[in-house]
View 1 (cartoon, rainbow, N blue to C red):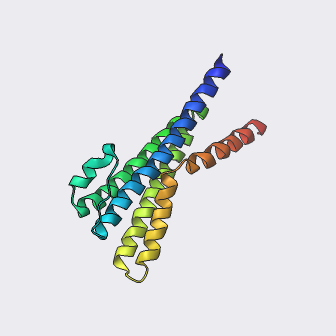
View 2: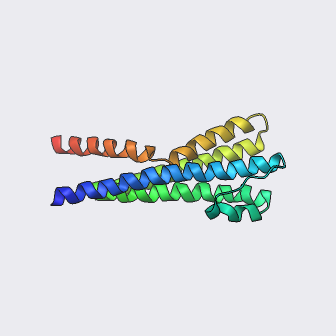
View 3: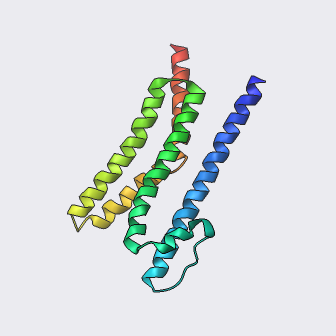
Length: 159
């Protein structure tokens, strides 16, 4: 029974991560399509649950994208934290998970800041910052942490 429960919990975690990954992609694609349509003075009908964005100003939507980037990164951190805690119940692993997500976010902000102050590197810094935040908004971090922590656990058992 305990093993079955563990499989069900992991299935829920995986389904949640897959859903969140696809929804995040869909969400930003809709917003970016709307902004692009506005750039070319065209209409873009947003899906009903996102239609409130159509009422906002262009700069407001652009600024909200920063908020939603952090929001989705936080959701992925939260799920990763819960998964790591469920699998290992180790506070050090929870701290590592937090510092990894925080580090990706801070590094991304640092590269954005550098890009703002150096016009020649602006595009490269922005792309790298987006890459880092893309990692924080994906299940990839968890997919690396779980095997890494499992290896640490195996090494502890050998010692």
